[in-house]
Image (cartoon, rainbow, N blue to C red):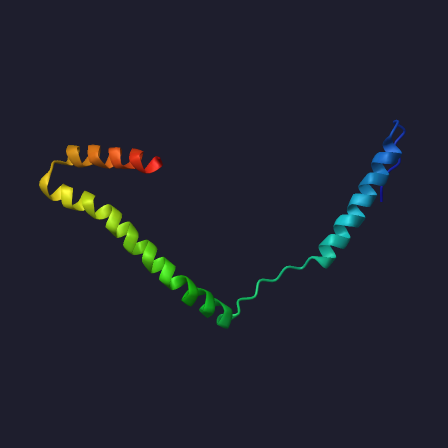
Length: 92
């Protein structure tokens, strides 16, 4: 229940609040969202994404192998400078 106010515009405010409450109540009652995991769909999605995931993993190993190889022959400072320069290059 909405209390009546004596200020100007209180009736409009009360009517707006009632409308909002009614609207929110109807939306809330109708919008029941339920997540359902269908195993056959998930299996299809994982199988479809597997080649791309494997390719991206191998690409990342390929791009990072140089830092590992350099670290075997150079100091930590030189490897760090190389890594910094490589990250700046990757931004472009």
